[in-house]
Length: 559
Ligand code: C2O
Ligand code: CU
Ligand code: CU
Image (tube, rainbow, N blue to C red; front, top):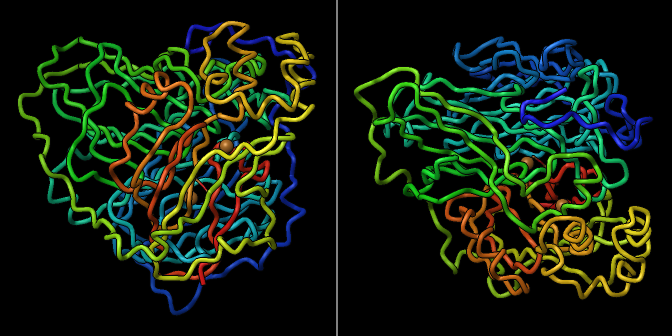
């Protein structure tokens, strides 16, 4: 059997595991807050019922696939608020306008507890989808908030304690488009010329059910599927007119990092990132994109003849994710070259909007506005002893470090970096041995600390895989901070593979407002983040969802 990438569907290593997604239902262990109900005093402009439910969708030919999904129902608001994507398990694309008062009634029709987070939106804690707010089957949680965000493309998905990865994998995810006046005035491509593109990798069993493969490697490295779906569809094709389009891309994968590039090497014109439009367009030969990140692309097909075809691919790169783990999990290797979707020009069109020279105004923080400008707060990423951690800890709701208490209405400086402390421990040595990649001596705990970037960046093949495993501590992490978007001030690299690093860096867009950033081994990023308006607990975590569920998550107490 062949999937959309022309690959043979895997015969999985662990046949006993070739069932559907395992249900951990570990979210039950967490104490929940009582579900929030609708408040009389809140008078919404938009009122939505959003059910989380089980369903089945025809994704591949043959049997339908059982999924979990969001289903929306607009009770009040503009008719274009909810748009369903055709034949997709993804939730409706929600379209909001800055300033709108929004109520969303989340109904849990699943067999386990859940809660939804609006990734990218600046909302009060009660509307942020804190894991402690998870609701039981049959319950409803009512979110009420005012849209404070500037125009941008955001991401809604579950944030259930230790079950985010499985719930997203089963299909619970969707996009949120926010509009504002500043953006409208630009006359960017809209309507049929503005296309959401959600990238997610999945694996399927022979009877077309979702397969959550990877065994023990999955929790350490994340899930890597063997095909990439776009908007929930394999073999995604886009028929376009010869004019400008706006592609709003979201990496909704659990762990996969992409290097987006056109097959004919047309440079990418980037007009926006996570937090909306850049100040002016930027071009890149390709763009790196980690889970949770968004990219707003201006693509001009004018001048292309009817019948011409362009393929968006994920191009080759080294490092970032140790290849051995992915190979063992049966997935398509991150960093190999593979197609994502195909665009065909099917009709000529003579007029097209022009790319604006200036897109938006971003209010940069002046140094004197930064509360701790000589004393950055650390976000230290580490992997070891089968654990993934931030600031030396895994998530626990009652555990708060001093550096995690943040005064409200301040701008804070953070430094994000890999912190390797000790070695990997014998757990990993065992894995290395078991698969015969390398001797136990090489994999031994003590020497791991010294492996540096070199390991992770080594070539492919068996050896590359083995080395990659040792370089795992340099594995790139998509670091996401809830609440208001931040700016990247600087990114410095002191690792020992500057060449591979330069390739990676050329595909980064650090100039706009971000809420998720890739941080790889040997890097040190400085970011400034505002903590305005809302007090309470807001999460920060790795957006490799398996890492998040393993506890690579902490929270700020904004007080
Ligand atoms: Cu998109 Cu806390 O997550
Ligand atoms: Cu978020
Ligand atoms: Cu991570």
